[in-house]
Structures are given as structure tokens and as C-alpha cells.
Length: 188
Image (cartoon, rainbow, N blue to C red):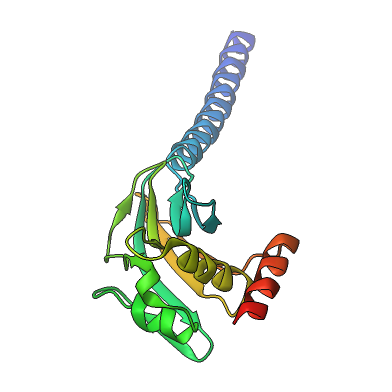
């Protein structure tokens, strides 16, 4: 009889151990699932200058290349000694003037607080307007890309309230931009 109780006790202990291991692996799987859920809606913002000519994009663009919506939490633009922060009214005119660029060449859009960019959205922070002398204005964009430039810092969060900051500049390290900039300086 004693042996029977001992077998039952061993089976109960073994069942308890198996249950504990199952609970551990279930918990680990839950953590992996949570991580997957967060990554599957992670926004990734990119801020890039483009000078694609008359039929393309010509300006400074904010794009969500991630898988989830990005909610803007902060924004600043600076050049030289001037720095503009926050949301509200369009401040590009001051920034473009400080960068020694003709602000009349650009259509501008200063971001709004808590604005959301869905995956694949691209918005122009400023872009060459077609209403003015396009050759002169394309030259102004090249000046921004190869000259003083404008730096931006964009704070954003995911729907899970995880926060990131993207910093970028209109300046481009390109031999072609350097050559175009040098040619423009000769014309000035």
C-alpha cells in the first residue's frame, strides 16, 4: 500500500512540474505575441529632401515608411541661429529667410499637434511651387540642399504611446549637388 501512495505522489509532482513548464512557455508566448503586435504597428518616419525636376517632387517631405500610424508629438526646424519649435501657425517663412532662401518659391505646411500620418503617407513640409519662376525656384532648392540647409526634429509616437525622434536635414552629401551649388554661386 505504501508503494501505491508513493507512485501517486510522484505522478502528482510530475503533473505539477509539467503544469509549471506549460505556464512558463505560455507566458513566453504571450510576451512574443505582445512584441509582435507592437512591431506590426510601428511607425517609422523619414524626412528627406527631393530635387526630381519639373515632373517630380521638389522639396522637403515627411513620410511614414512604417507599418502603423505615427502621431506627431513635437516639431522643430532650425538654421543658423534661428530655431522654431512647437505647433501652430506656419513658421517656414522665417526659417526659409534665415536660410537665405526666397520663401516665395515654396508652398509650405507646418505640422499640426497630434497630426497622424498613416503608413505610406507623405506630406510636404515645403515644396517648390509651380506658381513662380520654376528654374529660379529649383535653384533655391539646390541652395538648401548644398548650402546652409535646414535641420528638423520630429517627435512621434505609436498607438501604443512608444516615442521616437527623427532628426534630418535638407543638406545632401552629393557630388552632383556640390557641383550645382558651385555653378549657382558663380551666377550670383
